[in-house]
Amino acid sequence: MKQFCVAALLCAVYFGVPRAAAAQPPSVLRWGGDAEGGAPFVEADPNDPRHVVGFDVEVATILAHGLGREPQFVQAGFTSLEASAARGDFDIGLSGIEDTPARRARLAVTIPYYEFRERVTVRKADADRFRSLADLRGRRVATLGATLAYDLLLNAQADDGLVPVTYEDDVHPYSDLALGRVDAVLLDQVLADRGVKRNPSLMNLEKDAGIGHYVGVLAASNGALRDRIDDILRTAMRDGRLESIFRRWGMWNQDQPRLYARLSANQPAPPTGSTAATVDPWTAARRYAPAMLRATLITLALSCVAMLLAVAVGAAIAAGRVYGRPIVRFALTAYVEVVRGTPLLLQLFVIYFGVAAIIDLPAFAAALLGLGLNYAAYESEIYRGALEAVPVGQLEAAQALGLGRWQTLWLVRGPQAFRFALAPMTNDFVALLKDSSLVSVITVVELTKQTSIFAANIGSWVVPGAMCAALYLVLSLPLAHAARRIERSWRT
Image 1 (cartoon, rainbow, N blue to C red):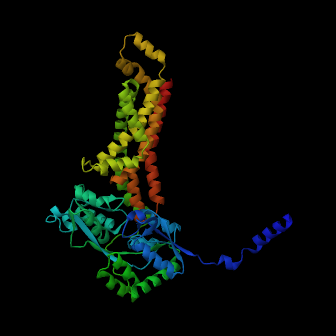
Image 2 (image 1 turned 120 degrees about the horizontal axis):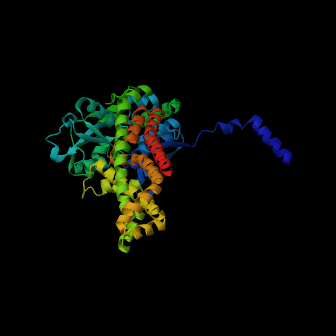
Image 3 (image 1 turned 30 degrees about the vertical axis):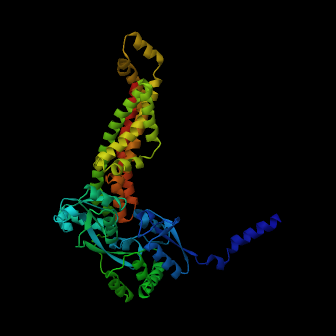
């Protein structure tokens, strides 16, 4: 029996699997989207969070059934949809993805299935001052990264001195506009209408800032599948299925019939408002190098000041836990446990967005406070352990010399404890340097955020990632080397 199994295995290896089984077509269409984007694009079904709903969900269903497959949703972050499609993580990306020349140069892009206009949103109180994007010269204008609106703001930044402020989601730009943290928001009509509904103090300007289109993106090697999908989309335009989807989601307007008439007749779609061009990654690296260096300085300044805050607060907490009364020790212990037991990302959200109605902190100040107070909890544990590691004989000798409690701490116990704490302090500073990348969620454009913008615009992480890693090493390696030299000098 054993010999028969071995022979069968060898035959299978030699002759291969049956051709019919190998040529069996896939049964599902795996499509990628970002459910965090929310309605009307893709969102978790309120009645059954295991499923997603939205107009892109229904478009994906039309495409899957047209191919004789069933749709299967794959969650992916919006800014990583391009890279995931290129990697083959799914067959097609659909999540309000905008058509740009650079995107078409990197991927297999479908024909547009929806036309939108870019809208500038301002506070109603500012409607008389700001009537168009050109009126916002020198002002802070919020948007999402890797979008047509971001490209338009970059051009306006060069021409009119606008200050683009990028966000990770489409909710907080409008809430920050209502609070006065930014002067305007530039996003597509769908998001702008939703933002105004949530914030009655805002309004959309009538003059549009550009025209764009939603498309599907596939890996560049999937041109044949893209062509089949284009045929399915044209058929759905002619028979009214796409119209019924957009009417159901309240998105149908007079731009769509003109677009569908052109595409059904195999005419090209009108050009988008983007002037972004595809450039060689190394050429792009030279262009982005000044922005990367500025972001590096922001990261360094933020990390250094936050570490100083962490050291000062951490030392105070450690002293309080060692020398304080029971109630003081209890309160400080509770602070340490709460901060260490909750994510830094959550703490940043609470400090910047959560308490904005009470304390409206600038983004950099909120980032500094969040990082400093978070690392203070960890530093306090290092210092407390170091204080308790000082030999009891040293404390008894100080007492015999007539030194008081605080004199002993300052002159005897503290200096010796600092020697014990130096190595872990250095490790914490390097960790803080890297954790500073989290502050991008509250609109601080530090090194990692600038790298992600760079990567999204050229469609690759290879060159931007290498530049980012090199800059982080330039920041962290000298610090580690200096700490080792200090340790060696103290040992001698």
